[in-house]
Length: 200
Image (tube, rainbow, N blue to C red; front, side, top):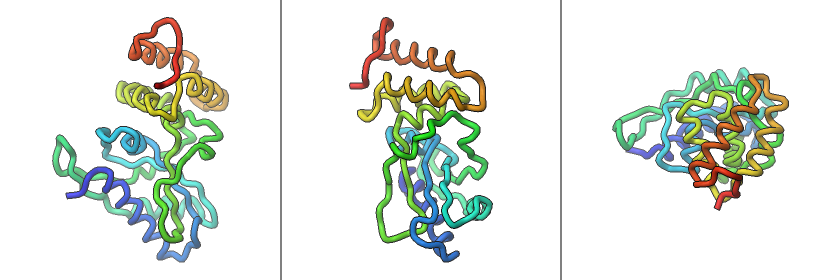
């Protein structure tokens, strides 16, 4: 049975096939991976039951993509603990409901480069994925943020700057206290309770 990583790309392959069948030209839709699946791409032991993706639409209406997502069947994969599990697109996911820096697309990396396709897949910078988790901030979200900030492409100082900027146009609650709480957890994790450090 396929791995969780393979299941992620299988779902995108299925979506790509549906979009191609509708006659869309190359590059018509960009998918930006978020949630547990994005964390998994940075830390392979993270799994999820749903795939969160933000779509940048070009030459297609948002509702048309949502319709395709709702029709896609889930993909089976081998969960390291639970065994047989399924992964499906969360067609309700919407980044307008979570904090996100306005320039996140500029820092994203294309994951899959193949023949011209109507769909391209992008992985946001680990700091942008971490920022998107500040809104809900469950125990799992905090753990994910700390893992993401350990990536070589991340630093606390830059994360704090981007998160503070993102909080200025976030529609939810004020994030000042949330950022301070995460900062404390980051300092404790790194044995530094007096200041901040870049990720080594």
